[in-house]
Length: 81
Image (tube, rainbow, N blue to C red; front, side):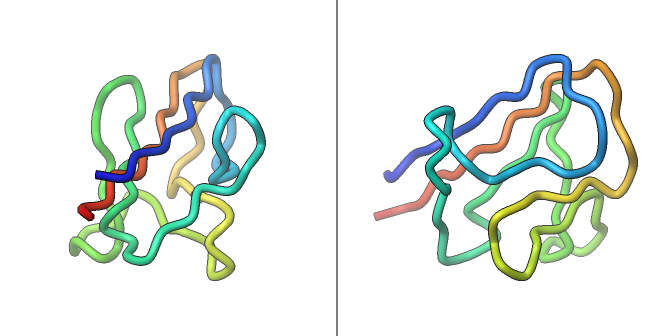
């Protein structure tokens, strides 16, 4: 499995860069390979039906459908090889 992640601590807002901790973009082929967790609760993507977040058309940002404040946001890519 190809794996990459980024954790935002004490995060606020709705938009988060889809980059690793070094600032390098987390590339992916399918949106289903990206998981978003807010305070350890998985949020869902439009690809799965009900949407709590979307990925920008240029695939560089995750946009939450509601603003968060003071939470931990984990962006994770797990791709089957």
